[in-house]
Image (cartoon, rainbow, N blue to C red; front, side, top):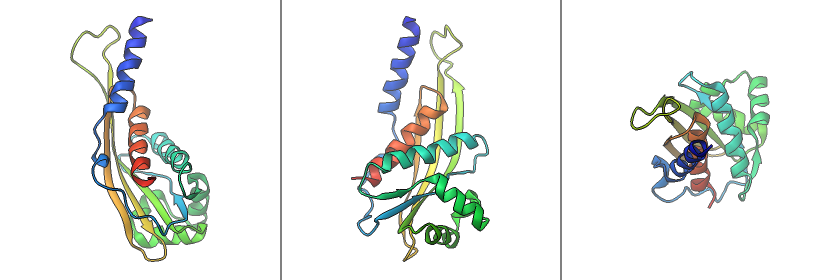
Length: 181
């Protein structure tokens, strides 16, 4: 029991202290954005569709606490299916604008999971086979629908001593902190 608590404490500290590419610099100017659609994340890594879906949903929850009216990924995904557009196709500004117009958004957040990996830490005492080390890299873009301007684009990287969903939580918290100020 003591070891399990220690592992949880390590995971929490790693989650809070994990460096990310998204921590530097000021946030983007989203002052013209009132309605923000969050598209399902593309799984470029082809390793974890559930992780990509959960990341977009979790980002939606975090951003909904901010100044925007948020159109959640489930609603955006339904519209994308109707239009015959896959998440991987949102790399195209034209496709992203089409989706944004269809759901009535001022801007659309897209994400692409570029890397997802979980390994066991090979250093130190390992009573349960080692502590998992997970890394998630997600490229995030905010595209304004009316102007087709890229308001924000950055790759967020989080590596934590925990399972993959903790690394994705780290990424989406970093994204939300940059977008909601």
